[in-house]
Length: 276
Image (cartoon, rainbow, N blue to C red):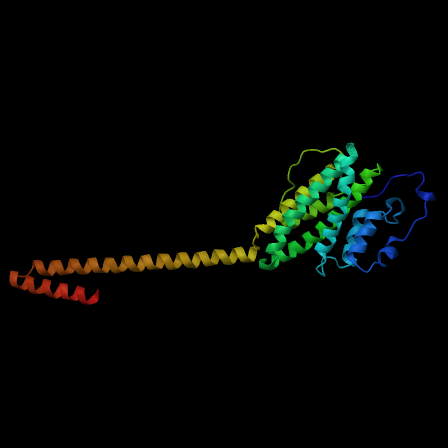
């Protein structure tokens, strides 16, 4: 998965470089992103590109130290500079590259909406968004590498199963399903994975509540309902008591003489006025 298989017959003759040591030389995230733009995948001494990128995103603490948008914006700038060249050289590969850049920009736009809401996230949403940011940085770099691969008409390192394990993990973590997407030539795996990440961002924007918060809300609703029904019961019993009292008074009055009835009515009315 993610293995660079181009030039299989000549790979053994190409001098391998230690990318781990090279990348550790960079002092800024911008320099790191530009290195990825110039990286030679044929010389990459690492069997899995996905794991390689994930390792260095963590190693450079891109997400942990709040450098997520520095990395993403730098990749976006690099891709914007390439777009003008891609438009002037139309062919199936450059067309796919332009589509890929457009898909990434859509994802970034949705992600910015989630970023704006991040200050109000509960603990569960913060954890999800932290993982999402790491995926966003990684897929941004992967898009950059894919665009370069398409332009150079090299063998595609992203196979149908390249994003497979990451997609499964995301679906489990966010409790969502892979959205249906139409098959697109050349960049199909990217299209499906970016569609999944967009769905994650939208889920985060909706501020999906953790099970604990949902349970708290249910308890609060129950308390309100209990208070409501308690008030209804109290009102009903009071009315019922008043009705019984009225009936008792009527029974007493019926057994009295006219003069006595008037006196009892007078006492009953005064009592009602006093208690109301």
